[in-house]
Image (cartoon, rainbow, N blue to C red; front, side, top):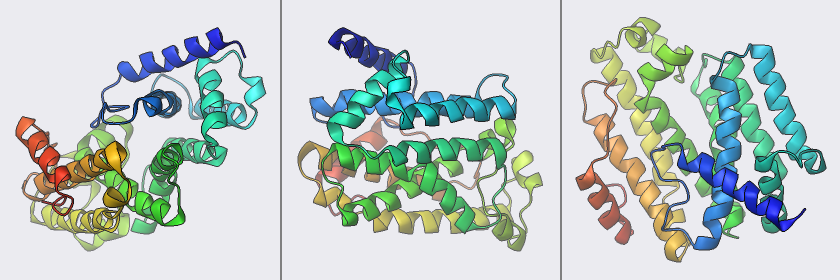
Length: 286
């Protein structure tokens, strides 16, 4: 592959990343410079694949076909030399020896979003997170050359917790825009909570108590992953602590707001708290 083509492919991925806003900046300035470019490539792959599941006027069959094509390109890199995302992605996979199954796991999650709108129990929610969130953390650890079995377990706990936080922030949006509820149906029934609550944004006592249980379980997951913030050293470790502290900060806002449908926003004061908590490794969950 000509170096000019690879350069253009990386630029294409950087442009995709720059057009989208996320809770945490893509390829943060805290990261070592040599990792920012591969992270934008991974993000571009995930962003475009996610769009196949959610955006446009495709039928479910067409969405599956688009994602099947992405799976084929991941598994057969020589077949995708005309797609700049995969030109860059193949280069990143080769340079950093990334497991391709982590990318196909992400695609599996996007397929779940096409077909699954409800989750019978918390184990099903966790299974979704296994495919939708955990591969991202694992890929980052491979980029950091820190993918030990212990670190991978800590990362899974953090990524699952962050995915759950995203669900809890977007209860109404997920329902209104995509008819999805990422909450355990059996626990909703036991708590006296129904889809009517979500459809009509009813934050009564039953809904609040039910969500407090979800928040507490999420907090325990995030606490399980805390050691990773100290195991990883230097700027990467600080970046990880910022992410963990940010998760705790949003959880605090969720727990203290009686309206479970009010999306918490991090302001400048919150960011200062997150920054200083990250400097002191034992205060991330404050």
